[in-house]
Amino acid sequence: MNNSDTTSPDYEVIVIGAGVAGIYQIKRLADLGVHATVLEADSGLGGTWYNNRYPGARFDSESYTYGYSFSKELLEEWYWKEAFSGQPENLRYLNHVVDKFDLRQYMQFNCRVDAAHWNEEKTLWRLSVCDGRVLTCRFVIMALGLLSIPTLPRLEGMSDFKGRSFHTFDWPHKPLDLSDKKVGIIGTGATAIQVIGEIADKVGDLTVFQRRPNWCAPLNNYEINDAEMDRIHSRYDDIFEICLRTPGGFEHEPDRRGFFEVPREERVAMWDQLYDEPGFGIWLQNFREIFTDEDANAEFSEYIADRIRKRVTDPETAEKLIPRDHGFGVQRVPLETNYLEAYNQTNVHLVDLSDAPLDRVTETGLRTTDAEYDLDVIIYATGFDAMTGAHDRIDIRGVNGQKLRDKWRDRISTCLGVFIHGYPNLMMPNGPQSGSASTNYPRGIETGVNWCMDFLEHAWAHGHNRIEVTAPEEERWTKHVEQMYEVMLMRKAKSWFTGYNSNVEGHEEGTIRYLVYNGGMPKYRKALNDVADAGYKGFIFSGDHKATVDAASASVA
Ligand SMILES: Cc1cc2nc3c(=O)[nH]c(=O)nc-3n(C[C@H](O)[C@H](O)[C@H](O)COP(=O)(O)OP(=O)(O)OC[C@H]3O[C@@H](n4cnc5c(N)ncnc54)[C@H](O)[C@@H]3O)c2cc1C
Image 1 (cartoon, rainbow, N blue to C red):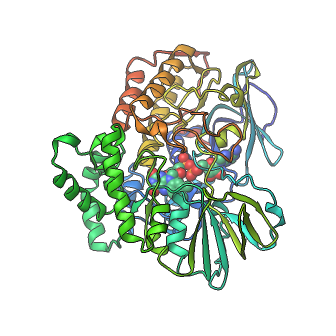
Image 2: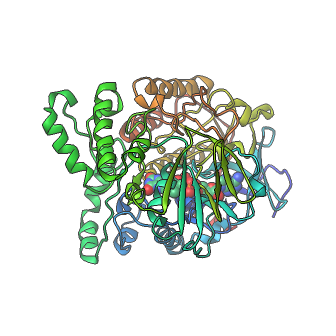
Image 3: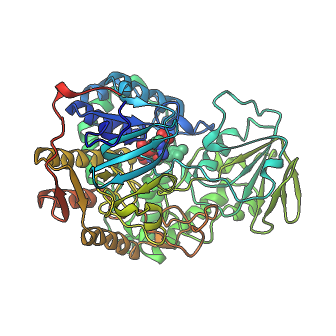
């Protein structure tokens, strides 16, 4: 391996991350014969599905809309077994994809990238890997994941605890018997809602420490037999066409009738039906005003609140599980199985931290400001340093050594969520402010990767070795992203859509960060296409570098 700063880099492209995005990205590069590698911090591929092995971890996308769409053969041969497939199967699927297309040869595991520095003189990136190597490349593609850095609460005494404790992201890979254990779980977000529903009847005792409740809706998962899967195979063209035209990249299409034009009884009948259907229909097949109109949102939230009251036997507990600080659907809605019914079990207890916050972790459990809880196991279901956490952990320096961390400290700015001014030759197929985060991710990921590949092929065809977005073009997109928040109720939510995370310094309340493009996938795709159709107006190209893109020059990591 060449570690020196010659003008001929070690790789034409280095992809960072071997999750859903990195896998498809390297597939496209390999098909073109580009000299490329993937550097992955974990010891295996799969990202989200390699790490989150907690009980109950599964898709909230229909499995068959989540899988890759790029290969008919792959679609035909894969038989999903559940409408919302679980983590072990999802990881098997991603390994199958990688083996089928022989992509493992391009992947290097246990290779965390700690720094990426742009060298203007040589027109290349220098990447420092945790194993001590420095690798150079012309283009770097960051497929780091938007939910790949777990965050622990900022609590005193965490290392004092004598029992077992872990974040859900780091759930032990070996089976864990909790049948006679006193378990405490901190958090009631999307992950906790999945875990609690799954383990409530498998643990000795479960205490849920809730700071703020979240809205949730039933997943209504079901098994898919081979005959049903054959029917899905025959529908794939239609399925992906629908996913292309819906804002969320799902099969669920919003109801385009006006909320207040439909009589109340009809609205309720529709909600009753959606509540019993699988998946995000209750959120995304609903009236569009749910996302924008306070009154419509309040009425629907009250409908869901009543559902909670019906499913939770103890009225006091039910009221504690109803969110008061935000309406339904202003953030990605956790989908659950048996979550609310778990609170009807005598071994499950809800501790409302709004009455008495957590004070500290002790040797034997948790202490709130008014009580002590003895525990054998503490589960931290405390979420992620979402959207920018993985970027912040790499020392990324662009033109004139400017640190990305500093550039993004007060305001996230990108062009299309793909490019950043001052960081030439760095692309993010599904970065912050891209179309992926508010949608069915793989649909956004395929769009992003395809667009990046078109851009790279354009650059290579024209002999450009340096591409950079201009400051005005970046500003145009960033302003647009910010303006989209103004019409959405989600701007009020304390969630990763607004960049809120009390466990990350600087991301506490009052620091709204505009991280998500809210226009939906069709509009996002149009924005990407408009830029390409205009000959990549708003970008500066330079240099006469010709990439070795013919298959003959392909080489492996
Ligand atoms: C529990 C859970 C369930 C989810 N369910 C759904 C769902 O049903 N539908 C949906 O659309 N989305 C879902 N998501 C979102 C999910 O993250 C995406 O669907 C998708 O997996 C993202 O793929 P990715 O490749 O972008 O990121 P990731 O899967 O997060 O992969 C990123 C990879 O980059 C690596 N990496 C990061 N930093 C570095 C570094 N410095 N050096 C080297 N490697 C690095 C990470 O180790 C990781 O392997 C879920 C997320 C979670 C956490």
